[in-house]
Length: 360
Image (spheres, rainbow, N blue to C red):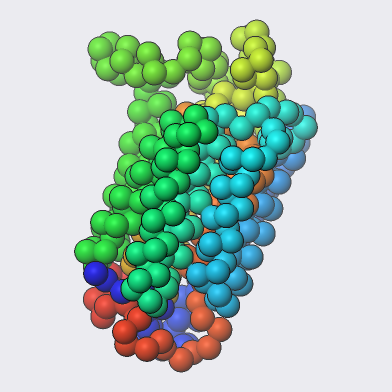
């Protein structure tokens, strides 16, 4: 199996410069998301609080994950996993931000929390220097599949299974760029498939098969999101204003005024620029994982969990929940944290030479 500790870098100065560039890119992307939501809100009397809170949650979680991951990576990962599981299994109904109430849906925030918890446990396993502890921590990671199924989250069980399988497969993968590229392409394919389905651009047989897996009301909301985006492709209708234009009658199952697709919601409310910024945020996460000093196994386990959340966001509204966006930031921060000293770890725990530098 591949090892799991911190990978050595070409030197502390080079590492700091690379980290500085990654952080600057993150500040620019997240700042752009916040600024554009304010611009579109000003243009169309929108409500940007939800986007602003999501950006703040990701940034705060990322900072916390970086700190905890640098000090006690295994303990921090386990704590994040335990918190996610408790929220998914035992929390009262959560509140999407801002000012709307709905329970955690099986295809939404609950599934995302299960995926993040499984990813955190896999990161904890690979961050451990003891081989026995690695195996022991993969057991509860696999158990999240059963827990998700028991609480009735089929999407969560599938997401956890995918995360654990990717984590195990990473043991023999030495080039993280290949794995991260595959995760990025998978997300793009699912997002594109959802948009094509809403546009009616798929072959009739495939479209009928996919539409049968979704509630009819969901498809109506997607069609209306595309119509709304077409009315103002650049600025959209304004953040938080989708529910003001939808003609679909409210139902108890979906009371929150969202199209339940992050891609279509951002496209409808903030236009193509907002959608480009959302895509840039996901690409930035993949980029910092690629540049991470952590081992390939830790990076790919976290990348698989973050990709699972991204895929769920194409057919649901998990990113509307602060608990999920904080969890995304925490996991990304843990997987990209660097030790507080410049001393490399012992050779038994260091990543193989061909994955050092975060570019293998």
